[in-house]
Image 1 (cartoon, rainbow over the protein chains, first blue to last red):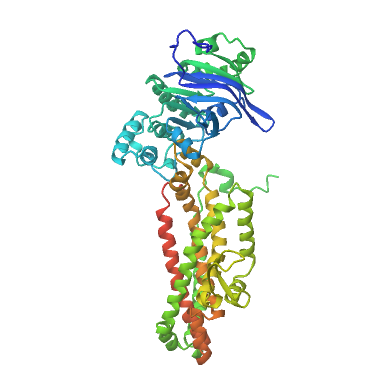
Image 2 (cartoon, chains in turn yellow, purple):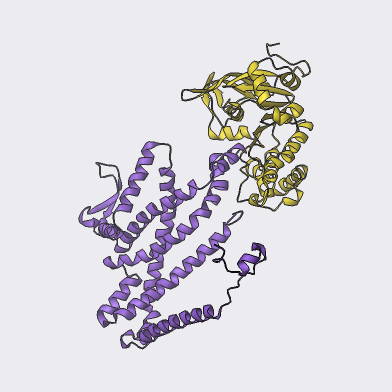
Length: 270
Length: 293
């Protein structure tokens, strides 16, 4: 059908997220250099690589939070960042961007729960304010989500009263409340105390098991290896290696990948 | 060397076993009592001196405090302060948003406005608006270089009351603008990003996330500013609008009871300030949700 290289154990259907020849410059600095990436329905796609390699920028291009200079991102059949009119492209209006982002959940390193609202208010904020869900219905759904992330007893707590791990789990529930097609995780555990990382990774693992399509930027190599279906390794704005977790971790073909994994082997052996 | 060290408990007992010396000295209590006694004596002397001063005319103070002429002045003072505060709040929001605009032209206009209205003393601004008729006899809205539009006599439009209101409101908008901008800047950028990532439009994110969080840090300086505004209304007495201060001055000009009438005015300003402080406390409680401090 087309030239997309498909790993043998993945279904052969058009990818939910398609990134084609994506490039972006910050001034003279090329942060993304001709990136190609596919994410299939139900796949857990991990992006790893050294700091400043462009992983987070790539992730933020997927939901239109960051714009790009060249190439295209197509998510769930929608071209990200631009609307087509009469064969020409024009940038999205803020309304069009907002409408698109309903389909994409984002969990970022800096948790950013709304500090002036309780946990349950945080989780229903999206459905009630953006989707127009009736409040009672949204509260019911939010309670289920909070149970799923293990925060049933924290409905009425304010973010400042929670631990970092609890905050991050609440943030995951808040993103899930929008029933997104794809969940993006931007170093979701990087800002957490080491002993709180596990509880967040467990929630993410459970989410993966339930079939959620996930793009995960992470420094947790063990998580990437065990939970990730496919791994893209980035370096200096390029994808330097892309394949199944077993291939990338077991038989890296690129020397820089091998070096990077060796530097991070401490994370893996525990 | 050994002869210097006396055998005290300091040498014998390990640090953790030494007794803690409680601060229970009687001398300490006595000294505290003396300070209090002197302070109370000085205070009592001052109060006694003021209370028995013949020039104080406590009877006049009591009479004028609730005299209709003063009460009307209080109402006018409240009206001026309230209108200027409401305009200042909305004007200030506009100034703050313009000042934070991406557009350099809009930003420069706001910076120019702030520079001008914060530089010229309020008293001068009041006099300028009051005397505008001598410079621009006719005022109105219309198409430039034509007679098409609505015009009127400047002095008829800018009555002393309106002139004062315009001066206070424009001045107020400048100060409020900076207070509001400070509040908006205090909101973590990540909070806005989280709202946007959730699918909110920038307008909705402003209403639901930025504004309530900014309010938290705007309210204390806002209270300050409202109190300043209330007291600044006394400046309008220079153009004789009939506010509290103008009336107090008018009365003491004829009966020479200067201090008693100034005290009457002070008592009213004090009462109004206490009311503002009370409202500030209520607002602070209202927006305190989730605050760590």
